[in-house]
Image (cartoon, rainbow over all chains, first blue to last red; front, side):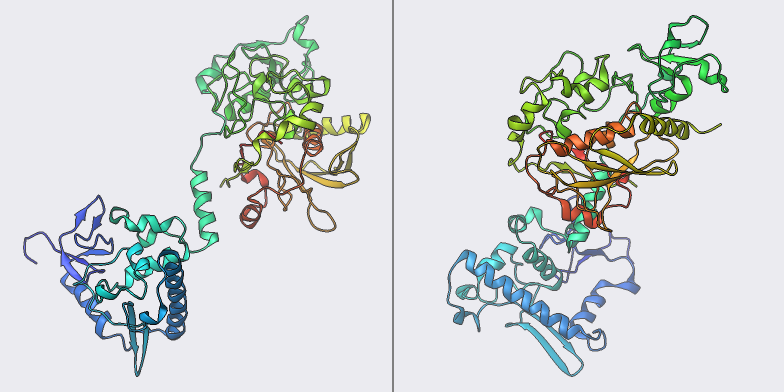
Length: 374
Length: 153
């Protein structure tokens, strides 16, 4: 090889070129992304392309014929649909007209998909929308825009999932790539799942070591007023005689809720909040600071807090009690005694049951997304 | 010494046995500290009148720091209630079973919450993404991080 910068080969135009780096290499003439750097003379992509054009005889796997036939069915259908959507033309014109070709020889037989053969590479590659709009009566533009295999695959994919993709293909800057598409629902689900897994936005934030270490601890003593209270985590009363001396060590959170040290530490390491009142030791996602009334807009995604008509009839809605020492039980059971929530939209559970809740529905807003943890 | 989880669960169980469950909720099985079963019915007027569902709780050793895995039992004559937050595989999208779990909550509190969730339902329908979810759902609903973005039901 010379010291010159190596050339690149575009598998879509079947031509050497210098790529655009946008930022991934793309063919300068067709903007296709199926490009390869020609570095190794032993593996010259031009030979590969040549091989594909000329020497397919032994390369075709069994069953390829059937595959190609079904491909043709799909393509034909796609074209018919495209035609309906764009212009009404008489189909008879199309038979000898401007259709693309997908021609492959296998041994003695020859499969030809489409109608015309073309000499790819020299003509401009049609965009997806041109390709579809052209229809069979493309008349004056005969010969223009035969498309090559990889591009064909892209177009096929766009045909299969045409909603929303068509536009993107019309814009050369957004030329699609095979890797940008999924082929079935399952793959789509997997991708959505993956995307969601990456969002940590709503996980509770643990308290830091420093915060935990700085919490006030006291050892239980006779006469301590704590001895009449319970640890809300283990639900046991604080007592002096315990098997485990650690259980005589009490941590009182800034919101004044006391816990056994061994009960509260693991919790704080998973969520830096008070289990009783959700007082946040570290800022939590979507935590509504005290004093602000969260907006109860039915469209506010992920807005779990604001209204007594919230999910589960309001009883699982804790946030509005963020700083309230009556805390969780009020939000769990407050609805039984006529409210206690700070939303103005309705006052009690019976109300919300009968009338107020459903504004949010029918807004095209999904009630429960989900994602899988690992 | 028994683990915190076993102590806490045995305390809850003792309370259930001594004081009984709230109306409409009945303990079916609690032979160990790993899986408990309850039946749950909605009392009074509701879309689920006369229907009875079985609720399964699975606990791990970090209960009550981590939430129990709670779902409706499906199959073998059991179905899950048709509800916008209940998937046909029995998984439940409820914030208190995920992000908003707190160790202050208990098995009975969860039962009551779910009972109320059913009681306040306006329309029996599955979540809109039911099919997609059920196709890919993990066995344990705790592996799903639900997005609780509808506060109207």
